Length: 251
Ligand SMILES: [Zn+2]
Image (cartoon, rainbow, N blue to C red; front, side, top):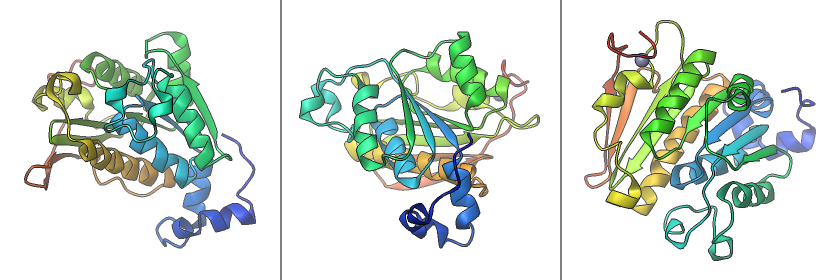
């Protein structure tokens, strides 16, 4: 992106970021010039989108073809009762614009596919955050991110569990395909298994933290690890992950 540098008023707005020595004004400018794609505006996507919007990421593209149903309100905290039957993308854009009117928000109300429009979008993005809820979409997004060497922040939450991993898509690094077979329960959905409301907020907040760090030029804490959350015992565990020789995408 090529936005004008942050004004004095904007520097005041983001001053609690700028006073972090590792982020500083240079990091905030990087966020302001960045474009993040959020795939899925459900429980995870609502949390991620709010933090990226508040953080001053200059452009967001939201992708989701769902409409809001009453059972979404239990955990999708961008939406309220007036939004039922509206497009998730459009309602989220409206809500996020109230939080930060200075950033550009694009709402794409159709599912991800491998058509040229989506390839062009991934190619133009600085980071992709996977907040989708099905394996087919996750695998397609992983293939696109690997093809265009775009960092991917992947997250999932179900029942009282969740995980986050980041993929830098550098030549020697692993991809989502390397670990997907080891993440149990990911093929199930919240509609089949349920999910505790704040668990999506916890996982979405971790995804947003890693995304903001990557965009601001800080080291990513999960580029070589998978973070697992067990909310019942409230324990986080980090496991080292490596490239799989059997991976059909990156090996
Ligand atoms: Zn792989």
